[in-house]
Amino acid sequence: MFTLRILIVEDDSVSALLLQRALEKNAHQIIGIADTGEKALDLLDEHGADIVMMDINLAGELDGIKTTEIINEKFDIPVVYLSASSDAETLNKVVGTNPSAYVIKPFNIRELNMVIELAIFKDRKEKELQKLNNELEEKVKQRTSELFEANKELTKALEKEREINELKSRIVLNVSHGFKTPLTSILSSAQLLQIYAEKEHPLKQKIGKHASKIEHSVRALNNLLTSVLFFGKADENKMEYKPKKVFMATFVKDLLDNVKAGIENDVTIKSEVVNLPKTVTTDPDLLYQILENLLSNAVKYSKDGKEVDFKLSMENNRLVATVSDKGIGIPKAEQGKLFDRFFRGGNVGIVEGTGLGLSIVKKCIEVLEGEISFESEAGKGTTFQVSVPVS
Image 1: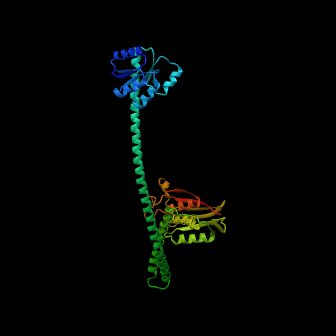
Image 2: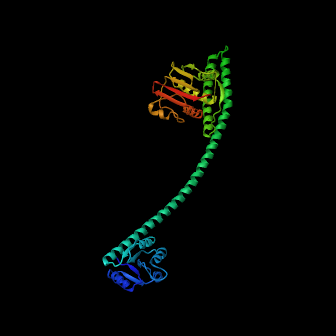
Image 3: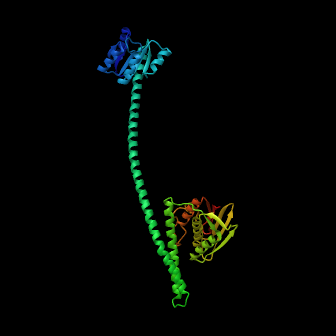
């Protein structure tokens, strides 16, 4: 048992004396006996205490309940109520003051000591819990402040990154546009050289060979710049659906002519058109990007002497295109990355490419609200099927 400094508040002198003797017998120190609430508050102001034994019914303006409310607010000392009554009305009055314990008169010394120990234990645990809560609140405030500052820094960094990305996009777009004009001139000159080489000339064969190389290189570089420009628009969220009336016969002819013009290996394209109307309304640029990239890839990754099958049909107000080859195929482990930007299969070998073609296809299909699927097996070829709504 530990020694406590106790204040007794009891207006019955006999009861107060008996309580004092019982407490002192257990080595507690009695700092005073008050018969009114006012005197109790004065004694606490002067001496302080570890615990207060409070009679509920006191003479004067302050009864035990009102006095306890002041003690809770001003001193934060545990209070044990003393009362000869245990009726519901009395209990309802005291419960609002959150007493540490409640003792019914008459009481025995053992019961009294047990109540006091429990009251002190309860008070200490509550104060420990309050201290922990206060520390936690302070940590939360500090952490919230740190997160707020970190969020401000992150916002600044993101804004800076956005500005840098916009500047980078503008530079890339400007440079790409700048290359387009000279590339067109080079391509025209190469084609003229081939025409001139058809005439009788001692270097006819060499001129034709090098002009052809120039033309293929220019086409490859032009395709790369087109891809860069495309993703520049996509990154700036400037990709828009711009529907136009498309004459399908002309569209398909131009598509196949351009793809065939870029073929560098001995691969042929077998095309089939089924139920295709004279015109459809869609975005011709996006549709061209899809089909041109799929056909070019099919040709590029096919072996010499092989054939690429291209079928275009109209089904339920949707254009359905199928591109099938018997080329190198896509390893199963890599198929999940197929539409990632800059991804190239591990089996492409020395075949040149940027890894942008299928990314462009996927983005165009998203803008057109279409669908794409594929089947592929390494070493046996790949089949892509595209479906886009048209009107």
